[in-house]
Length: 313
Image 1 (cartoon, rainbow, N blue to C red):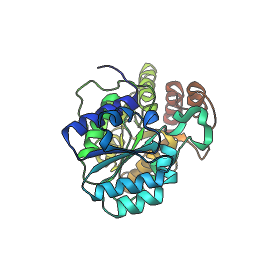
Image 2: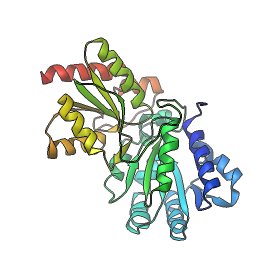
Image 3: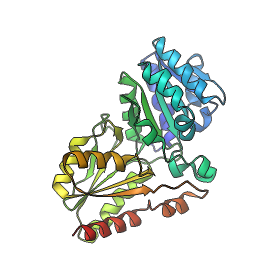
Image 4: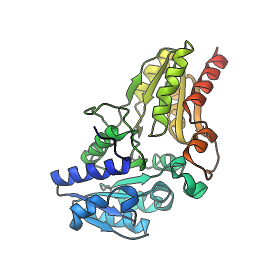
């Protein structure tokens, strides 16, 4: 399988879906090139709407299209698709019981040189408070394709976090996915690393390999769907390992770490370490710098996991 950028893969699957279902439409806020939907606009000019730099209007139009029986995919940068349009999305799409598929791209440190104003570390936390909303984040080209197809088939609103640049393959071509069901990338008995997203999942797989060389058996779980969270898998590995580590390109407040903590505290109290952004704003930098700055590299994840297990003992 050719490794395209995530935005190209996103555009490709939208075109595939549109060829299969004439209800699929795309709404953009002047970012069709940035978000990978330009090819869709060329292929289906009558089913693509560019509203300009007016993100709340984008969501309102998507809600109207859904009310008319369409399946709209609306896309903008994560900072705009969450913080800026939250009330419009909450009321016009979710409270109204419609079927809008909202995508936020360049989440967290992937915004790079746009710095703290655009490095959205809060979007998943914001979105998981919306009643009934499905919230997910693919980690590679294969999971992107599978989860977007799942979102299109789901009756109800969804929010997807999309890393738009680069591409990678964590999963083999043909792997299947279901919203709300985690994927086990590595098994382990000493700890379970629960993670999500393009930048983080591959680093956690590498971290588990580093830990294995140190005699530590760490499972790696791709929790691609934040809501509904796969509670059964969380509890299975909490019981199996007695030690859970979460890692996310997001605030640890109200993100994946918080969601896992809620499940554990209510069902099976377990030693937990949350890795991610700890109540900070973003900053300008290249990817290598920002990965180290916020502790997202495989070496840092392995080091913190090992230290956590020592504390537990």
